[in-house]
Image (cartoon, rainbow, N blue to C red; front, side):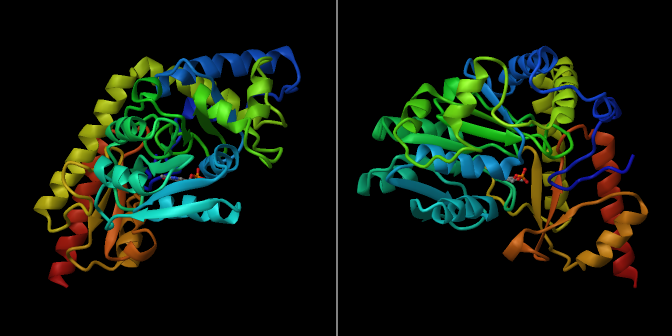
Length: 359
Ligand SMILES: *Cc1c(COP(=O)(O)O)cnc(C)c1O
């Protein structure tokens, strides 16, 4: 085992890997329908929802695109404070949508008031917000944002990118009143890349009916139609469905509350370590991610050197994202990682820092 502390893909349990090797089945047949049905019912737990979970054979970025194509006619508000929100905004623009940009300083969260102030100026079809910004390590207060948006502008849809939190931190789709939320399997679900999971509210489905040019491959309503017969519109990544079914059993056996608590404990350990080793978290206190950390490079460590050093111990962390490269590093604690893994990584970082001090 060589623990991957990068924010996806992460280490895949061997039982899940074995499921990938199952003999192929035809996706237009009872066996696939049963597989789909079973995995979908289990996946609802991840979103705490009674709505359908659409299991799509593309990575999380596909859901960024699907949301813009299906749920926006006139105008969307993109809340951007980091690389993934930025990508979502770019997707809106490149799909010909009229997208307004709302920004806060990198490392700061979007507070509900900031968003409501913008809603006072303009009416939006939808607000797009990243729950867990994997570039800065900020967790935005999604439930509070959803409540505030709903109160101020009841017909504005709330679209949430939960790609790097789903399966590692709580998402309560129905209770929080979200309209579209999604994640991908290669982050906290600890699976190989290739599937994403998306949930739409009835309001979102009604809205989609009014949106022209939704396309074919990512048409939410086409997914919804096929859902009735436990199928999907085009050939799915069948092997990943086998693996998802097995992994959801494992996840539910651990217990979602336990899984979330484990992620939160590991993340807090990294934050505390960073604070006491001149590598404090980049994200503002009280709004820090529970699934990964962006730490300031307080020792001016050379990332290539650090990476090579860690590689010898079979460890891997990620550099900062885009403009945060080299001035921050990212240590994720997604998936199946345990405290002993994190302890070993932090010891290794200490070794690197102290050796460097001697040379
Ligand atoms: C990883 C990530 C994405 C992109 O997902 P892919 O599965 O890599 O396409 C989008 N948003 C966030 C917040 C992410 O962390």
